[in-house]
Amino acid sequence: MANTFITPTLVARDAAIVLHDRLMTGNMVSREKEKILQANKVGDTVKVTVPGTFTAEEFTGSTNAQDVTETEVDLTLEHHFDVRVDLTTKQKSLELDGFTRLVTIPAMDAILDAIDTYFVDTMVRGFARNVSGTEGTDPSTKAHIVAGRKILQDNKVVKNGRLALIDTTAEASFLQLTMFSDADFGGDGPLGLREGNLPRRLGFDWFADPNGSEHDRGDIAGTVLTDGVPVLAATTVHLDGFTAAAGTVKKGTRFTVAGDTQVYTVTADLTLASNEGDIPIYPAVSAALVIAGNDAAVTFKSALQADVLYHPNSVAGAIVAPSPLNMGSAVEGYKGISIRVSMSSSTVSLSDSIVYDVYCGCEVIQPNGGVIFQG
Image 1 (spheres, rainbow, N blue to C red):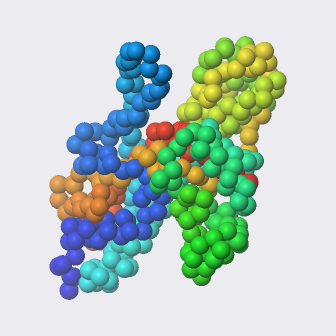
Image 2 (image 1 turned 180 degrees about the vertical axis):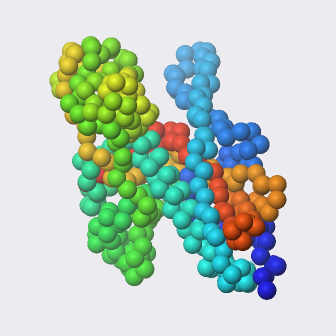
């Protein structure tokens, strides 16, 4: 006889706990806006305010008022991940603990992999204007870490709470470095070596995410050239000669132009039209790029590896369940993370199904708060 204790509410509760406890990158960003987005109460987008900046002035008898100039960034629930499981007779007869182990945990593992992959990719794309080392190569030495750290220092990023998120290739290299394993660098070194974990070093807590992958630059193939003379200080440059007539150049893609040593970073996805488009860039067009002029050759940099040094307050994320369906559906949360579980039966196929689903969004709100450090 089917276990009547397995209800959408109980399954959703366990699913939320599992998702929170096993999630990696999703737990390493600021998620303070989740409460506002819960259950779609205000739509799928919320404004995240980026703190303003001020200048200390020399006092000369009177003070000068400075405007509080704040900027706002949209945090949008742009992905909707789900896992549907068609239940067998044996699964329907399980106690809740067995159901969690055999069905809920594997389903949550699939969803958290999708969330982590999305969050890591968003961070790489958002921090791509700050790169140390050679694009496309994983860091492997202390010097590679220090070079990335210097950029954070130069950008005056808060030291307390800094994180290092790396892929498994970089982790394999760092685990062999003396600074991470020798007791001379702290008693946590031998313990970390024994457990295969990287201890805190150089002001960073270290985490390796197997979902980190090479950045997708999009449809950049072709003999790409500047089209027209770039405008000094403009934040877009018109390029043509792409092989794809209506492809997409992805945010975070980096390139140089013949005659200009500046590396430009694409700041937003751009859909091409007729093999060309106005590419949004950072920094703005330089004088050298203006001189390079029309039909200057564009060279795209290698795809970035997912190795990031950053402060979590530089990234806003949200993992939010949709509203419950009218019947056989429940939403439960755990420490901010919520998930929806819906159960249904079909009198046509005589089968039962359960669906786990969740919305998620992620955005780098302070691009100078992180660096992609390469080898």
